[in-house]
Amino acid sequence: MSDELNVLREEAAVYHACLKKYISDGMVIYNENALTVMRRILDKHPNGCFDMIFADPPYLLSNDGFTCQNGQMVSVNKGEWDKSKGLAADLEFHEEWLRLCYALLKPNGTIWVCGTQHNIYLTGYLMQIIGYHLLNNITWEKPNPPPNLSCRFFTHSTETLLWAKKNKKAKHTFNYATMKAQNGGKQMKSVWQIAPPSKEEKCFGKHPTQKPLALVERCIQAASDIGDLVFDPFMGSGTTGIAALRNGRNFCGCEMKTDYFDLAIERLKNGI
Image (cartoon, rainbow, N blue to C red; front, top):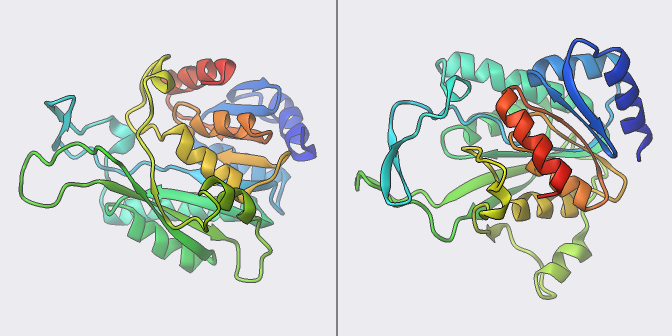
């Protein structure tokens, strides 16, 4: 267990007494707004404490539209947490959590940020304004995406992951040999075809924006080392925590919605 995680566990029990949390071997997770938790951690760790961050922020797409699921037309609305409050308010939200993540990363740490066309250009712009140096633009291709019911534009079949470090001179971790071995001895490219989460990954319940374990595991295996501390400010059903623990990393995460937090605990307990 990393020294940083030991400190976080002690602080979670003492300084964060007002926050609902779950502490177990190799991890500490909070049922609280990520901004609140990050500010509290930053108070105690002004120079940063995380080796890698995986952030899957709200895409703010709950706009009363519709999509296709299991052959049926369904609403895209996921909850109040996913509703846009207007471009200015959305920009303010993204800038705040991105600046906090920047401060909480160790000098040589890196961050992964997920998105689609609806939010990735805004977050990418903000990352560069804040000072992040972009390393890669990963395209996650879904092999069997939902069909486009409106027939008014191309079918959405990809999402984007931006991978960045704190500045151009930072000596970031990249396990090149591991990625090459996973790709049959060839350099791994920036387009990844990975299936959505399996039924097993949803056996304890469903999260509407759940990422596949294989996707997050690849990010963790590529950009961190055994014993490192991985942070996820919007952990949802806990996929990043499972990926971290499976690969010998430590984990700290936040989830604001209690039902998803409870789902994450069940998944983390069972490693699925």
